[in-house]
Length: 103
Image 1 (cartoon, helix red, strand yellow):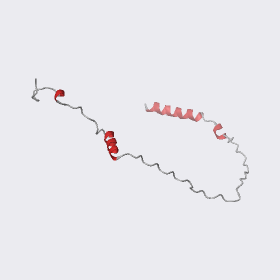
Image 2 (cartoon, helix red, strand yellow):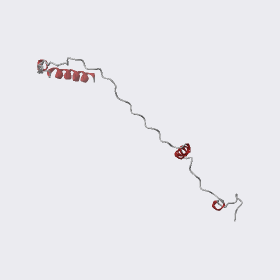
Image 3 (tube, helix red, strand yellow):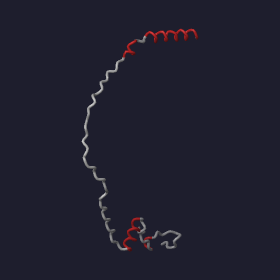
């Protein structure tokens, strides 16, 4: 078993050594560098003024005028505190043994 593995290893090494070529070493760099151009940038004679924040902040809008009572009702309505239960009087109550109003 070891002999077969050893022979296979030697065969694989022999085949890999035979497949190499010398062309890999003769790779030439074919890149062409662009020519360097002398570009002259004209600068202004005077220095530019420093930027400043001249913007005026807009005035905030006035809050809407709502009475205190209306504000309380609006807040209660938004939280569901103004929901009303149906009025359950004598005619709407169910008649059962516990109520004592059985007919």
